[in-house]
Image (tube, rainbow, N blue to C red; front, side, top):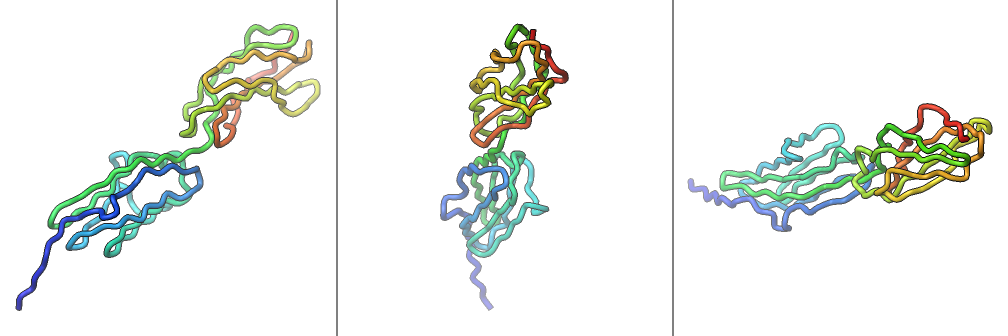
Length: 201
């Protein structure tokens, strides 16, 4: 008997994988056309580490197609994705950048309060560790008046490149607790809150 086995090196007839940008909670999804004889082994690597089909990560391969799905994407899923095809005749790979964007983390402390005067003060802080994958559009400064037992109200807003704000228009002799939130196009961060109230005088 004579068997004619033709070996064909792996290829990506559709051009491989492309860069993705998506929001936290969405699904990272690649549906990749592949060729090769015998059917190539498929592996995925993210930032140099092998990706395994565990938990939110789903993988499947059939003739002519391989799929990757990561459900409920998190910021930490961002990275450089590489798909590698191997068979007895050779190998091929394709690379793409995946960026998962979300709200920023809180501004970093300390939250310094200086230049306290009759109706305001100057606040300063440090940028958040993570901008959420999207440039910061600004910071919101809020104050809570202890005497009114009220909620926090916005008292100032600055752009995303500024980590200082001059707050004005506060009540003289009022006790205020300040907090600052970072903002990007996905929304506001959790706040960085002052440890104690400040007497405006």
